[in-house]
Image (cartoon, rainbow, N blue to C red):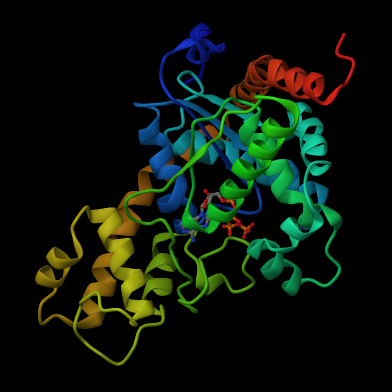
Length: 344
Ligand code: AQP
């Protein structure tokens, strides 16, 4: 089947009375079960209630150095993945951050309105800079660019996992400061967390979040992982020496698996305990692997189809860029004018 974008995709959603949501994801590797449950899956549902803007954050991705060929293929793969998960370029705005220069322009204005100390307090910077001593300045100023991403579109809601709470809070603070210094310009965005799965933890170290750029491939499940590999990773997931399937404070590894099971099955923790009463960790893990595989299989099939549709992907990128630029232009001009720039 040849994919085709409908004409209505232009930017008609911007005129609707719905709340505007802005979400972004970095092309820093194939997406994990954490990205899927904490973000992408809820984004597809959000299309029913919000005017959704989705960005592939390829400018953010280079805050940790990437080989050009790797970045290029990651962006392409991520675009096909988001489409395969159900993000619709006909209903929503989907674009690459690097194709809309307004993001880096507004990012600069916000950097100039941010204190050094504020950025030093960012926990993601602290943890990523510890992993790599020779980090670039972009890793430090990243929150300003993320604030620009959000503020450019008059965003109401920012759906994120709880790992991003501090960055959304920062965007609100910088907007508030800008408004009080230069006059009302930006809308203050609200973070929006999924009911369940707001933070999926590593399978090998449940005190850390599951991350796609982790060095240990056993710590995460990728959306593209083969069924056998998923079974193997879940079997190897860190738990403890108990045998009761029950969410109890302090049982990090088991709790994480119960959260994943709950997200995918829709069952509450109590219902899960009841289902696995007297069955032990082995049975629970096998069943968990099965439901992950059955969630991912149709997405993997759709991805394999879409990744071959080169023209369609190209059109999505071009159309997304055109629409996003039109939407971003007035806010950039407004912020520039407020700061005293000559805006012809
Ligand atoms: N473990 C997680 N649990 C729940 N949500 C998560 N998210 C990320 N990890 C988890 C959510 O996914 C969205 C996109 O994230 P991102 O790729 O832009 O950046 P990130 O949060 O830094 O994700 P990773 O996987 O940890 O990437 P790397 O390793 O490159 O830094 C966000 O909404 C995030 O909350």
